[in-house]
Image (tube, one colour):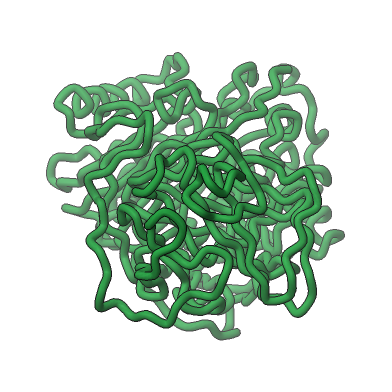
Length: 530
């Protein structure tokens, strides 16, 4: 089996919205999410040096918020445009101390910075849109920051270690005014100067990362970056569409739709009620070619709705259904007019990389991951999506369409558990609660607080399978399901408080009228029908 050791993230699309505070009302569940044990933050970033070339002068500063030293051996540093690097030697950060990660460890060559961790070309910081993250040895993302432009010759520095800080261009950051080394501005390796915003330089928004090119919606690579939003509230809705999947993600004015359910009229009513008529959807993802995932998507292309779509992703596998052919005709027609970019999930960034990252305007990110190239049947060709909240230690979600045991094993063997990491706060359960989409190993990889399922109360498949329900009960993982709870809404507040799950009716851990035991779980899909 092919092993992918490199995941290059290269799509940045601007892609919600505001909602309520956290409580423990009826039909809701509150959780702290995935919180890292070691508190280290990215406290300063110089992505666009002027005194020396980028390949020598880029650096970022890490700040230890703990009252004890932390050794960075085994930690990973990664950015949007590279595979990252694991720190292989002992690098101790003192309590309350700082350490510099840079391209070059030669203090003279790199503009006068004492670099504790040299990463060479393994981590490059784009002058236009980019993000950078640090991960603990267990794969947990401890901190991450993003930007959509840089300031030539000056770092952006975090005012306090506890401020909301996912956006380097946001109000928690200041532009450095203190010269260091050969003349760039910053405070590498020490606390940020108490300088407010009066003397800030203008962002170098015209800059592009080395080796990149400006692009339009129909070109390869990253689209032009758009201004970030100060509202980082993240909202995810599992829409009640009956026996199928349909998901809406909103963050900072950005919108992403994943799948469209089986009934165009029902999906169309939901689009209208959610205010998507005459709106722009930044990305639409069709996980695979089954009717209960794509049929409703035809409503996105109804002329009377005037819905704009910037990117559409699907694997484009041959499929004989007339309804899918009509949907693809609509997609291709818009693509030919230059109104959307049509991407194959087997090559989501259009450059051969197995992964592509969408950066939403509120600071959240989606990693679209190539499906199993040898997967048998549409289910095992489902694209996986990892959603990471603006504060990646606070919230994440794993969604993989109808992937069954064959493809789940491929995710595992391909190292998706390591990069971008399958561990997530929430799991959108594969295949509507079928036991071929959930297994003990899958739960070990994702380790969710809560599992969510989309299905119809009366269905011909026996969903949810009692094996799935019994496994979740044994693991003490609560679940919600659209057939019993209606549309399920997850709200991740901008103030970094606990995420909240609210439902239209009922509570967690309900069973449904069609639930029954499957004859077998995880059998070879060649031996049975869907």
